[in-house]
Structures are given as structure tokens and as C-alpha cells.
Length: 602
Image (tube, rainbow, N blue to C red; front, side, top):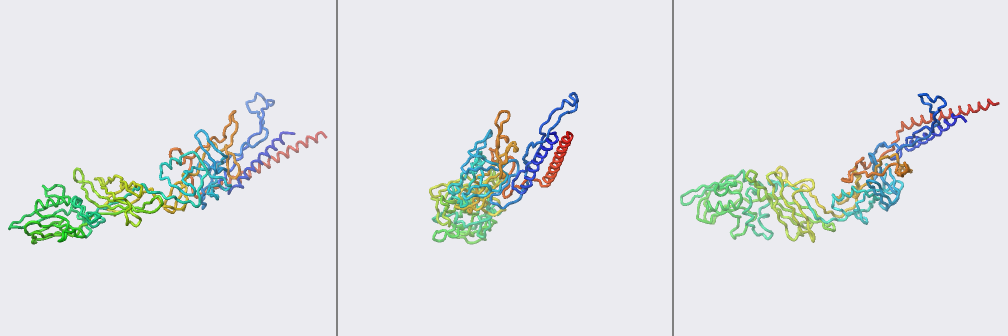
């Protein structure tokens, strides 16, 4: 038999192999996540023909036939299109999703190897669903492997309240099947930590002074009254006194045919400079300089009037009195040469104080709601011009109440003073509140995203609350971020990670073997006397420090199409067909030559 038949026969077989491979690619043009094969050929064998010219500088090699060299996998990505499947996802970049046949399995990826209790497979087809037991599976029922944080216990989601710990676990390397029950409930979480951010505008909200200067039994808190900064008061028209601007109080006293004029003003100069800052300062200044008394207004029976107001009284001899000045006008204490006998008094308009209240929902271990209420009252407006600067101060009273806010649950309110320094930064140490048999760590300095402020151009408001308590809830929505981390959103507003989808990469994707169903598996072979994985050991798809994917990203609600280029496939199909036809022609020619040689004998 001549070599022409041998060569053409191998060519026919080789091109048939190419046709089979390309036609298979075309058949899978709409298969999700399919990776096309690229058929490659090689010479069957060759020989050196020394008989032609052994000393020639040109090659005298003679090749015999062709054979399939490989059916390589194309690792280029397909296109990505949106999908409505609840667990549909695609992976963009170098790497594969991991599935396995054992729901009790384990797949651990080490830096220098791996451990597995069962065969595992790798795929780019992210069309996943849940089976009847809540396990994530592919279309063949293989379980999707990933990191499971272990928060789902007996159909109940138990919050860890440990974001840093979750992040560390999500960067782990031990993968197991992922399970998310359909009827998943969120276990209530006891509130033990609350951080809030607020804005306290000193000129925005005002409350009657009795809310601050009277205790719960109605007793007058005289020391608190005396220590109150006059600039931190307002009149009955809800106008801040602004004593730093409307600072003058002029008093004229006439008695025994003599007239004395006094002028006092708001400031930090002290009694020697006729300046006052607090109500106590003004009380002493008036008594020492004029003999008049300043106190809270009372009726003839000595009981406090409601609402509270200031009262200037004469407890000495008869006189004529004049009260003038911008501060006197703000307080409604104007008087012009009026008879002011012993026992007479001049009363201001009702006084108010800058205030604000916040209510934050908290939860006991059964998910029942309670309110953490805080009342804020400004006691000092602050002054940045002094040396050292005087900080703005607010007194805060906090306690836990029932959800209606009527009955106090705490043993007693906790009182604290918060300050804003000359740079408007808050100074507020955390406090501890009683909550049934437990304690709550409560901070007013700021929440997760915002710090507390005292901006005068924004209304007083509760900006944000960060707390670790949660009521009961049911599973509402599932989300997957670009790092493959699975978040569960519940009807109670909670959203927390439960695990992540496993991603593995290989140094040599060509070393993986197709097993059908868009699945690939690792294979080993003996190379240089050593048994090795052709693909290399699997590589964990994320950094073990922060859990961020390092080779690509997960696209939730997307699927990857087949990476077959139809135009190239059809072109290559024609080329393979022509190659097949030409080899068939060569075979016929070789056959004719043999027949002709046989006829020569005849």
C-alpha cells in the first residue's frame, strides 16, 4: 500500500475529529456557560531520508499523516445577559463555581493542596435553584459549595452581631453546600448597644422651663436654676434671648430724693465689671448692687407659678423703679419710673429653654419593642472667644420606657452632660442603661455613618440610629454582591450575610476535563515519573485577608452565555469540510494508483 492512502486516511480521520468538535460547539451555541473546544492537529510521525542526500543543508524529513493533537478548551468569557432567576448568577473573570454530589460534603482549598470528602466539579453555568430541602443546586441536582457562616439553625436565622467576625469567616477556605430554607425566620435579638447621631440646634426647639427646673415630684431645682446660662434661655414667643447680642439690663432706682443708675450686661467679666453669665450671677449682682431680688416667680401663697417666669422683687424700702435695656425688653421686664413698694415685684414673660427629645426603638430577647427616650436641655450656650473657650453644654436624661412611652422600665433615668468644643466636636462618654435584667451601652456621640452635631442652620433631628437589636422577621429577599457574598433581607428590616458562593481558579484551565452537563473535573497524570494534577491545585478565589475576590466578580441576576463564536464556527466548519473532501480525493487517487500498478502485471 502506498503512503498516499495512509496519509489521506489519517487526514480524513483527523478532519472528521475537527468536524465533530466544531459541530458540537455549534450544537451548544445556546448552552449557558458552555466553553467551546478548539480542535488542534499534529503530524502523525516523520522520518529523515538520508537516502536522498545525507549531506544536504536542506531538510529531507518526510511526514506521515495527521492526527488530532488536542481539543483545547476556550477560556474566553461568553456574553452576559440579565436573568430573573432567584439564584441566577454569572462569574466574570478567571475562575469557576464549585458543585458536588454530597450535601454533607466538604471541600477545603489550601495554599499547597486541597482536601475533599467527595468528587467536586467546576462550572460557569450559574443557573442555580433551591431543592426541596433549601439547598442551592444546579440543574443536575449537584449542590453548590461555598462558605457557610452557620447562622441558620433549624429554620431560624440567628444574627451574630459581629460584622468583623463575619468578614473573617467569609475569607475562610473550607467550603460546604449552601442551604437557605424557604420558611426562614429571623430570631429576635436583644438590644445591648445603641449608638445615635443627632443634631442639636440651640435656636430651634424650646420647652417650658418647668420641664427642666422641676423634678418629677414638682420640686424646684434651685441649684440647677442658678447655674443656667442666661444665653441658653428663650422667651414665651419662642425667641432665643441671645443675651450675647441683647445684653444690656439698665436699672434706675429712686428713693429718698436720690436716683441711682446701674447698667449690667451679659459677659464673662464678673461682678467687678457688672457682668453676668448665669442666673445665679445676675441674682448676686442685683442683690449686691441694687438690693433687689431675682428669683423664680411665685404666687401670694409662695407656690411657683406655671409656666415658670423670672421675678424681680423689692424686699426692702419703698422706691421708684425703671427697667430698660435690650435684655429687659426680651424678657418683658420694661418699666419706667414706677412705684415699687416693699413686697412689690416685676414679673417677666414665661421663660423657655432650648430642648429636644429622641425616641429609639429597642427590643428585648423576645423581639418585643420598647423605647429608649432621651431629653436634651441646653444649660450653656458656650463661648469660643474666651480663653480657654467655654464649651456648649446640654444636659441629657435617658431611660427605657414601654412602647407607648408611658411607663419607665429602667430603674431610674441616667443623667449626663454632653458638650460641643470650640470646633463643634461632640464630647459625650457612653453610658449604661438598665433594660429589664440586662444592660444597654448607649452612646450619643455618633452612629455608624454620622457623628452628632450642633449645627445652627439645620433643624434639631435624630440623624441615624445604629443598634444591634432586632425584632422577629421572615425572609423577604436574597441578594448576592460582586464578591459572591449572600445577604438575606428580612421583613423586620434586617439584612445580614449568611455565607458566600465558592469560587476556585486554576493555573491551567486546559487541564480540566469535561464530564458533561457543563461540568469540569480535575484530572491527574504521571509526568516525569510524578503524579500531578494537569490543571494544578485549585486556588481560592478570594483573598484570605479581606475576602475580596481577586480574579473577577460575581454578577447577580445575570447568566453567562456560551462562548462559541458562531461566525468563526461556521467558517471553521467549511474549512474542515474542504479538508475532509481533499483528503478523500487524495485517498481516491492513491487507490487509483494501486489499481494501475496491479494492471501493469496483467
